[in-house]
Image (tube, rainbow, N blue to C red; front, side, top):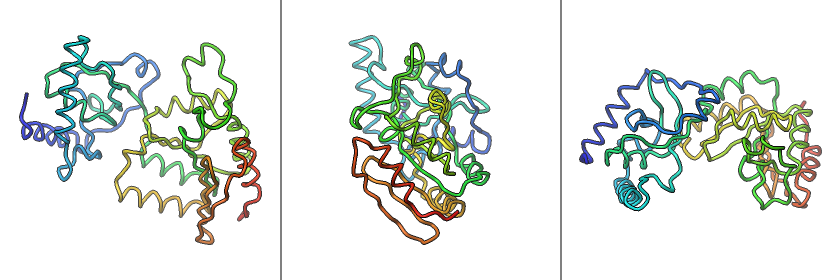
Length: 292
């Protein structure tokens, strides 16, 4: 097992080796389905993650806890990664994969000398792509929704849309909340860009394909928001939205929030009938002021 200093040097060397060289590569469906394990040495620390930043760095307490857990799982189950979620990664040029989520588990496996680790390959949208989508949009109004809390049915929001037929329901296990298709179509008809977000690292291709099964599209799909913590990036993205949209609506389970960039105001419209959430939201939006 290497020392903490040696491991930090390894991280720094990896980041320097890929600085100015690494670019994301979109992975096709077969690659995402078939590649389930990878050599630990072919995973690279993400320079944008706090794990890789010298001022924060890895938590050796967390790494140590994972090391103990891995050793116990190997002894009991003959599988050191038993019960763990795979490391979420994105394929990159010139080699290997960039870690999006799971740095400490990867670090524990590396330090214990395990040759391979389970991975989940995803495609994600980056800030430059978001910028291009916004700047080339023909619309001047934006709606944002959380995938897990609002768009997907989670058992807490009334009813779900009818499940997809077999075998599509096995490929796309997530179901939409009842009324989401009607809401999306109303928003599209009225000239809104629709942006969906999630803290989880869904592959953008998965979300696009799932929405297509309901004859829907989203302007932008942004996942892994819990890791998008750079304050400068956040500031730039907020300025981008203000410059390109008259207003943004954020829809959640309890209210419709309006960020009005014309009047420089913030307004909240409560949803009074949660059992008919989509109908209430549609009626609220229809009554909003128009700047067209």
